[in-house]
Image 1 (cartoon, rainbow, N blue to C red):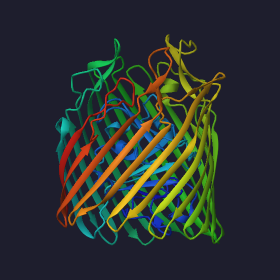
Image 2: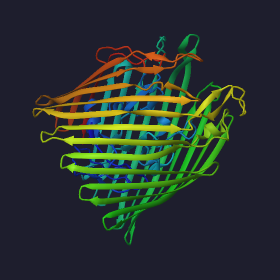
Image 3: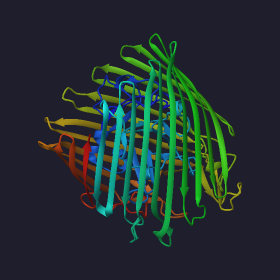
Image 4: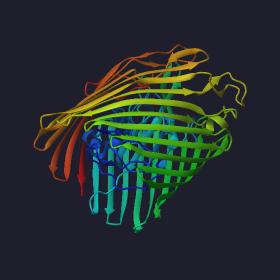
Length: 613
């Protein structure tokens, strides 16, 4: 996976552009969800880039499996492929992340927390993923406390009509297929993708025997066109439909059940990018609708909606670049029994200053004013100091917040006295590049969250007789170090790896405990290269150690077993446009759990074909 450092800013900034999947050089302009395109050596924040080539090299189906090999990123999953998945960045869960697909905020507005479930997101139709760590609420607003995950779907790279096709089958009767095609001209582009995955699955319950199946279909359509030299318009549309068999709590723990979960996502975005005088402007409107169904459940249907209208302007003033904008977001949720809505008005700005030829400073601030509770002002300072041509020192300090979800406020256990959680985030990083092509990067990080919202059993200040959501008097702390390196071994092979140490804890009412499901040690090692003239291979080893998890209602937390998983992929070029491959996941058939009582797949073998046209 290619690694660089760049300041990811508001996705309001740019319409869809062709994204080139290639090695990142220090002086390269990275096309990313930023207010402006920025040289990677001139920004302070750290971002990992997963390209289409990275995804093809490993061949893995699940996006969460891909991202979990990045420094600072881990996940927990309630079973096998498709099961509910919580992604964690620096020890903080999905509720503390802003997630965009083609510029569309895809967090579920009807969820218990406003978050995106990575469980049913497969790699089909995806061209590029960028993962930014640290508080970014000064750019993105609520949820961007741990970081930002930006996902771009397929875009054509060659003039004319082009595309790619993939077919795969393997263990647990898992079949995946995808088609992406597009048209690229001098003035515009058009792209379409469809991907489908079906699997008989494994039993989600570690003690179970029945298989829990999964199927999902993903569509993406995007386009952009230059009407004039000063006006570009574009649009994007995404859709996902999933059906999952689920297990759940029963006598003695997690047991087989006949329950199902159906989910639907629809999203769209339109934009106009234009120049008036010295100001480059972007107007955008986006929408996202989610629906979750649990046939036979206590509450069977949850629906969420989000609508956002935004303006962003950018002007160059001497050695400074100034950006400013505003956004209005309307969110609503409904279920069989409850409903609620919220409107948030926001203003934001950023100044990027070249203090010297080797020193760049970014100052960002944002004000979010919700309609029903107090607003929040956040800020971020990012510094990049090029100590030498091959050595960069980076530092970032930022504040963030997470607004209470609509469910936490209007659901059956909701409380209207909730306000936003607050965060402070700091990081200091050093990146060194060597003449041989090797790179080494180290980043120290610390994040503190206050006024954390939790569910309190037995609380009686809301309509529920069982408990209510409330804010704790205490802090959540997460601190540690991220290390990563990549080095060539001769001309045909490359060794890569990363290690993350995370010390995460929750403090409440004077008592501090280890945060659950956060690995204290996360080690990844890999080897990639040319086996023969037309044959390539990649081997990855991941070791997770020292994880605490819950054990039951009112019972003390206890450690999960450490685990090590080895994956291998070998691909063979049939010609210059087609390849065949074989992939083995969990090569040594390790038995492990990321959530107590839920199984993970054993050794799994897959074979497939990929072609470009």
